[in-house]
Amino acid sequence: MPTCKNCGRKWSWFDSIKKLLRFRKKMKCNHCGEIQYQSTSSRNTTSLFVLFPIITIPFSVLFNLSPTSVLLLELAIIVVVILLMPFFLKLTDKDEPIW
Ligand SMILES: [Zn+2]
Image (cartoon, rainbow, N blue to C red; front, side, top):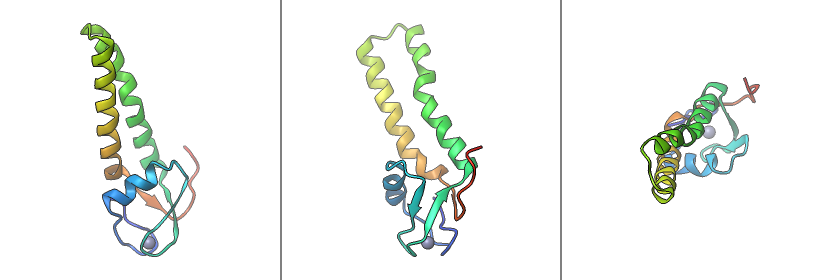
C-alpha cells in the first residue's frame, strides 16, 4: 500500500482506489491533507497494467472465443487490474516528470 511521503502513514486500499480512479495527478493525503503525486516508476507500472487487457485480445482470437466471452474476459481483467493497482501505487511529494 502507498505511504504518504509527508506524514509517513499508509493509505488504505479503498482510499488509494478512489484516488487512482479520479485520474488526477494530485492526490490529497487523508491523514495530513498534503498533496501527493504518483511516482514515475509507479506510474510506468500502472500504465503497463492498462495495456494488459489489450494484450489478451489476440489470445482470445487465437482460442476462437465468442465476442461475448471476450467482452466478459476483458471486463474481468479490467476489474482485477483496478483491484491490484493500489499495491503498485508509490507516492512522492514532488511532481516528477512523466518519464
Ligand atoms: Zn500524509
